[in-house]
Image (tube, rainbow, N blue to C red):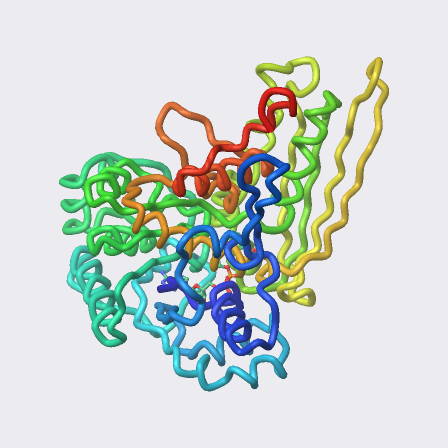
Length: 421
Ligand SMILES: NC(=O)c1ccc[n+]([C@@H]2O[C@H](COP(=O)([O-])OP(=O)(O)OC[C@H]3O[C@@H](n4cnc5c(N)ncnc54)[C@H](O)[C@@H]3O)[C@@H](O)[C@H]2O)c1
């Protein structure tokens, strides 16, 4: 179940249909194309991830979701303009059959958006109950054995924790009383967890990242993860920054700017939604570069992130990075990166992998935050008292070691050949 059937969600759904029909390859998906090395290097064992752990098959997935617009998935994908018409024509019946359920939505939390397909209710608790009913109906109607919910909806305004987020009792009272610190995304999260459905948060919204949801996820043994898909510029940042740190090259400044013309760009043009995104994008460097450990190299970095809404580009985002480096004896250098990427093309395989891995986690009995899925997020959720892991290579190792652990295989530590291979 996707909350929001916009550019990312329809590119994901269309992609699964296209792959099922043999029209295209699931490039970028760890679950579909990744391999995993097992045992010593001399053993030559590297099965596909999907042959190693028991994952749901693409042919068994049924899609549903909510949106504030009434467009079916075919119409929404055409509007998003990510995939070409020829591909969409070949999967039109499947796409057109997915019609959004009425959404829980309040303009207070996404200022640049409004639509007609919205639920009415006596209070937020009533809206949550309606979502729970949607979930149960979907399950019954399609005779489904397992469900996963993923937030592919818009970025909400910046919010911080309040007393209403601290316990289940306080939260449920807040729902009754229409507490303004409970945005739409949290109502979905609550509904999912109450129904025992794993939840992934693809936007930087607070949503599942508050104590009450952690409590609920633990209590009900439901896996959760977030936040904010790690796609374009941040993906590259978390590839480059660990490399600079490994070589002990200093960084004085990192200026990142983007132009983006899709609906996401339009929503992020509102300063309050942008602040939520900015917080998510900016924390990355601090954690990777560890200025506390390396003050001479990384203290007081000037890190600037900008997103400019520029309609002519549609979903084809262009990101520029300028990095001011410092080398041996303090000599300055510069690195420029120009990434002409496609936002939803990068996000779609992440949605697929998260859905499939969350389903695996649920069957493995793992409740609460799934840190091993940090690989997919800009601001990975983490246990209280720990810091998030942002380095893409450590995240990848953690993900694969978790799968090895699940199957009782030796973890790979990369110790030298003379000790352990
Ligand atoms: N594409 C990427 O690379 C990327 C990366 C990280 C995060 N994200 C996040 O993913 C989300 C989706 O991105 P997108 O490009 O598909 O945007 P989009 O605007 O095309 O789609 C979002 C959809 O969600 C719907 N929506 C908003 N609030 C809703 C609600 N309360 N209930 C139901 N539907 C709701 C909107 O009507 C819209 O159709 C955004 O929050 C974006 O910031 C995208």
